[in-house]
Length: 485
View 1 (tube, helix red, strand yellow):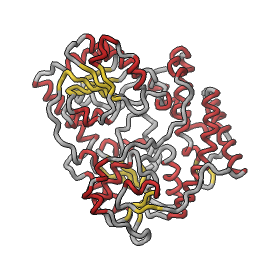
View 2 (tube, one colour):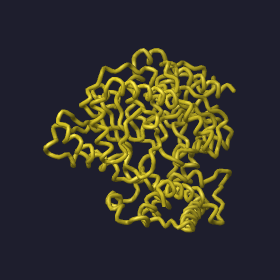
View 3 (cartoon, one colour):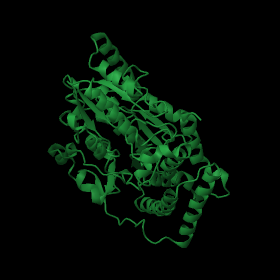
View 4 (cartoon, helix red, strand yellow):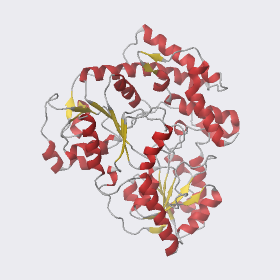
């Protein structure tokens, strides 16, 4: 079976398990087949890889069972939100209820840029955040109502439903030839039980606060989808701003928010074409992150920056994605580095990648020319002249900086991001091709560089949208129009 067919088989199994059982996954008006779908993404992919060739997943098995990682990992809030001018302008606290309210239950991680945008624009509505995070957001209203504990004892009917839900998921997958590993079965049962409590918590919060709209950083997996579907049931509009390039087939096609602001026309087209649930409205606003983007100085073609995508088993959703893909790319880059004595390699690992493993595998002879970076991509682009990108937003950032891009992709499936198709990057889809493209990247002539730059502009037009410095204002206006509809 071709890789594209295996990937589709996995997705159809994940979506189709209810049809193979007599179990009704709808409880109190909410479809738990949707609320728990994300729990199957990595488990089904792992199972199909193992069924195809048990020897190929030795690396994956060594990494242990899928971890119950925090979905909304907390990162440092942008320092710009703490600027004195912004604090002075927005320090006054308002009384909840005087104006329309937008509730942001997850004011961290991806929300840092989003909330800063809304607060800076001084909209005519109030942004409400949980009190525990209010200090980071001057101008937002802290909501101090006691939050219900999702881990409190489950009622007997909740526990029964959770058990039946997990049983049905396993039966439905088995009917399609997919038998999860014991460790994944155990984890799935625990996740199903926890999800019932999380949904109860979301429903209680929204019933107490009664916001005029909800703002989420993502809408297709927990904990975000818990609030999204609960809000929709209650008739509360849900707003989402695109937070990255959607670099998977199938898994990121569906949208559940009612009002979505996207960066470029390509993402709007993909939602309209592929999402089973259609939002009430999709607007192209551009990427607020690029509003303040400053031109970069010329980079050094012999400073190579590799920005990785997630490779941990829990992030390898389609069967064609392998957890050891990153190490294969790493080995190819080390070989290329050995053949180009003038070059140095800087590795910027994703938070869900194997930074420690890369560090352990650096050959002693090249130790002075390979480094693992913890800095931001923007800062690292200051020196780098060549960027090795996988299917990720980092490739688009490199284009914004006018860098030569090489698209590394060693999975059996075709890349999702059409960097190469646009002429915006050189191909690196196997060891030989990646190394050849790196040799070409340091030797581009003026005509080749101009052609790549033109391809990058075409890509940015379609995927990043308008880059006129006003994306923040457009997004704030979009949110305000939702609240005042």
